[in-house]
Length: 147
Picture (tube, rainbow, N blue to C red):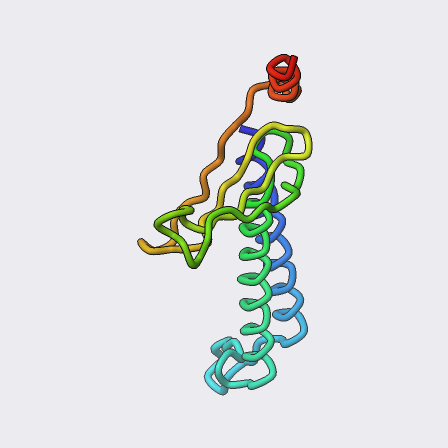
C-alpha cells in the first residue's frame, strides 16, 4: 500500500508543479480584450504565449514520465532504489540459455525485480518476486549443506 501511496504523492507533486508553471505563464501574459468587449486568451494568437504553454505541457509530461520510471525501479516494501543489476540469458542463444533479462534486487533483501530485455508481445510488466523476511536463510542452508 505504501508503494502506491508514494506514487500518488509523486504524481500529485508533478501536477502541482505543472499547474504552478501554467499559472505563472498565464500571469506573465495577461488576456486581451477584443474590440467587442470579449476577453480572449492569447493562445494561438501570440506566439511566445503559445510556446510557453506548449513548454509547460512538455515539462509536465516529462516529469510524469520520470516519476513513473523512478517508481518502477523501487522496492515494493521499503521504497528504496533497487540496486545491482545482473544480466541473465543470452541474445545469441535464446533457446538454450533463455530470454535476456535484467534482475535488480532490494538492498535489504525484500525482493527481486526481473525486467525482460526482449519484448516479443509488446510492453510486458516486470516480474516482482518478494522474498521472505529472513535474508540469511539461503546462506545458512548453504553452510549446513557444506558440513
